Image (cartoon, rainbow, N blue to C red; front, side):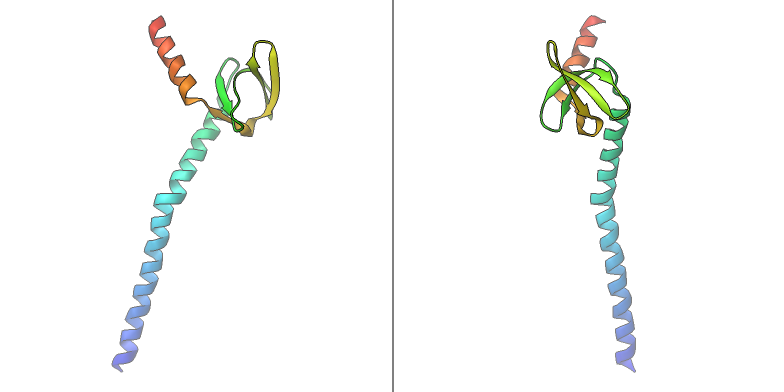
Length: 106
């Protein structure tokens, strides 16, 4: 009889351990990734003409046109390429430089 009750208690402990492991994965891996994807999606929806961005391929440029699923990106004076919206990320260095320029103008 004692063996049966010990086995039942061990089963509950195993289930609780699995639930705890799933919770750890969710809060330390899945949830932060979802937040990051939400921020990137919000950035892409807010892109307008004149914004500086970097593509997934590492091409820096300035947005010259916005369409439904693509952007016109000027990579140098007079040279524009068409890129997919999904391959655009904010350029941290350029964004920081732009913020400093705006502060000096004020």
